[in-house]
Length: 306
Image (cartoon, rainbow, N blue to C red; front, side):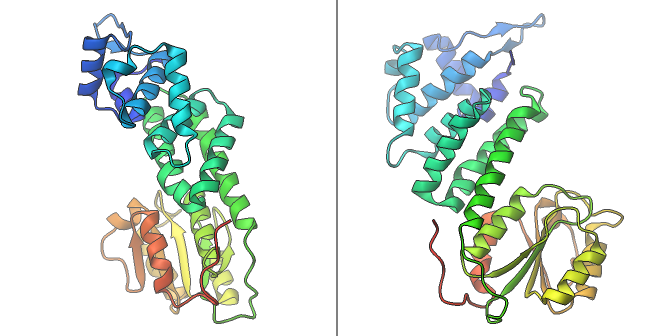
C-alpha cells in the first residue's frame, strides 16, 4: 500500500496542507501513521477520503456536516456530484484520480467518455486530462505513486485523442487553400500526447495535417516538408533534440524549410533564448489552440466536435 506525505495530499487533492491539518486536528478526518522520526504519513484510504470530502466541500457542503458521513455515504455523495450534468472540474478530477489510484481502467474510460460527451475533446483534455496527469506525475516523481497510474491515464488519453481525430473528416490535399500543418517529434523525443492534441485541434478546424509522430530525424522532417509544403511545422520539446541544442536545431530547420513557420511547444522551447526569426515558442496548449485561426483561414468554417 502506498504512503503519502501531507504535501502529496495537497498536490493530489488541491486542498492546502494547512487546511488538511485543521481538518485532521479538529474533526479527526484522517488517521496518519508516524515514521520513526515522527513524520506523518497517510494511506490510500486517507487520500480517498480526502478526495471525497474535498469534492463535497467544493460544492458548498460544510466540513462539519461532511465529517459526520460514513465512508460509504461520503463516497456515494461525491460520486453523485460527479454524475451531475455540469459537475465542477474539481469533483471530476477527484473522481478520475480515485479511479487511477485503483487502476480501474473501465471506470476511467467511462468518466472520460462522459466528460467528452458533455464538454468536447479539447475542454476535457485541457481541464481534466492534463491536470490529472500533472498531479500523478508530481506524485510519481516524489515516490508516493508508482509509474503505473500515470501510464494508464496517458494511454487512455492517447486513445481518446486518436478516436476523436479519426471521427473527423479528412481534408483532401487538392483543396490547397486549407492551411497545411506538419506535426512531428524530433529524434529522441517520445512524449506524443501534446502532439496528438494539436492534431485533433487542427483537424477539428478544417486544417490539413500531416502527422508523422515521434522520434523523427531532421533529414526526414525536411524531406516530408519538401513534399508536403506545409504552412507550419509544429513540434513538442520536452528535452533537447538528439545531437543538437534547441537553438541550433531550430536554426537548421528554418534554414532547410524557410517558407514554413516553426511552432515549438513546451517549456524547453520557451526558455531557449535567441530563437531564429520565423520560430514561435508556446508555453501551453491553450495558446496553441488560440494560434490556429491566426494562420490563414479554414476551408469552410470550423467543423463541429463530435
